[in-house]
Length: 436
Image 1: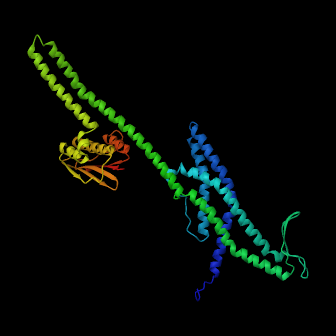
Image 2 (image 1 turned 120 degrees about the horizontal axis):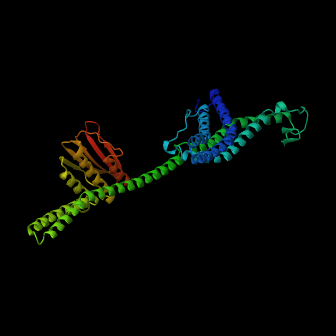
Image 3 (image 1 turned 60 degrees about the vertical axis):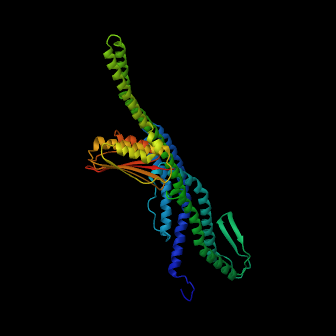
């Protein structure tokens, strides 16, 4: 840098020339990789689809999928090589691929890249070949020219051999003019070649980075849609599972509770009827027992109805319902509830209520705790309820445990249940429920 002017150095010229050569090599070898890649991707996907239907075809399908991914991985490696060797960013290394899209979006976008890259490769390769061909032909014309020094024949450039050739008449009759023209055009092509190769590489490699990288916007969009689909399916399964578990529990509770009381009530009424005339004192005793059985059955039915739709939750809200649960808990429980920023959906309130109710039941039955805390916080569109005890710990969120049913209920409304219960305690059960 002298007096505000930039003067190119020999090192920068070498770097520009090396970059043009590397990019030209990348562009000139692209037709081969594109022509081989499309049949491999299509064939691999077809073989994988057929192999997945055949018995024991999973190994074949896995190899076919790996073959279908190979052209995309090769192009990603080529993009990284041309960027690093051309003096740009460092080699990107392995192709980034998320686990969620490894068998879905990656494959379909590999196929999209294999199809769309063909016309792009055709254009960039033709432009690069013509630039190199015309530049070399004009630069070497003075060496190949057979025109005599005094000839007045116009300058004509030939390309090809035999009967098939192209002639370009430039109307230059002076040898000096022809030489000056050749040098001028050669220098012009030499200086514009890096720009041409850079534009072609940006177009071709940009298409590859847009379709082959899991960090691209299209990949993120497809991955997000797939995650939403999987979440919706998981919620549907959780709804069905939680509903089935609730129905089985309700059937068991009715069979073990009110149904038995009603059977005994019927027996006491039958005994009272049998002794009504002959032994009035036995009839009166049977009727008194029948009244007690009827009251017990009524109490159990009310308890079951509270398990289905707690009246206090409907009438007085979640805070009062949790306060009632904490007050009825066998283990001393303290309520730590923050303010609710907005009204909650009935499904969210019900899920939060049953999480606390089931957790407090487990505390009373299994934890051997001396005290526990019920917490509730509502912030940033998320309701978090937790139950913490100082018991022995060891609670697990696994199949066959009561907490798994709670996890299904929470997942059914789009939430998540977490259990932190190391050996020797303490145990914390936390439900995160979205508030839409």
